[in-house]
Image 1 (tube, rainbow, N blue to C red):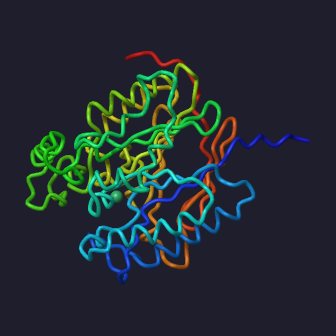
Image 2 (image 1 turned 30 degrees about the vertical axis):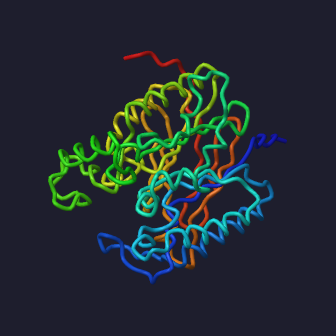
Image 3 (image 1 turned 45 degrees about the vertical axis):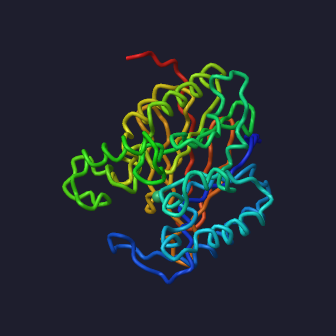
Length: 339
Ligand SMILES: [Zn+2]
């Protein structure tokens, strides 16, 4: 009889809940219905599903856009956040929160750092201080990123894809000035959220990018993981591979982020949200790029979350509702030489 492979650990994933206590409405391009109120019911369903799993997830990755920007218009940001957090706290499992554009429509970075959406205190203090997570100093140009190891030889690295952004940073911020200048150079449209006529359609205001100082930090973390022969799953709100998303949803400087990840043999996968249609590709280095379907555009009778089962040689995603099942085999670990 064949022995079944040992299950190392499991974790949950959910993206783009975008809760608001308002009636259903169409998205920006008027192609998809958004179920603002029902997204809370789907979250409750996901919490109930994880609670009933035989093997309790070690943690849940919440990939950003927890509440919708409409809450800011209606001055309900804090009330809606509290409503969603109340549901999340019913599950006796730690959430790791990523920040997306809708976090910044509702809150300042200063507010977010002092809120329960800041899960950076869960970061590992690594032995090598040069790769510790960035300090949580609340200066206007700091970024929100950290890493943790839930299991021997596995590491999760959460990155901030709105580090360069025209939303979320107030004055005085050098990064804000640089970002706005860059956005306006790349996007001459009066409405900076419009990709009309752009050669690089990702340069819209609802996306953002990763700064040089964050890229340096990511490089240090991944170099350390390469040396320790760890397997790393990188997590961010914005997708970074054009084959795993509509190009309008990519991070501004996705090529730089992608080639940095591809230069490290430790990277297994990149998990993102933002593009509610979801997407998947394996890149030429064997890194899996999984973009998760958004809860907000999932009809009430369905679902959109998943649980990843992590084994010695693969991860198996068990999707619920619109999230598809996938088996993600680990890339062959070969020494990569600099080109
Ligand atoms: Zn988003």
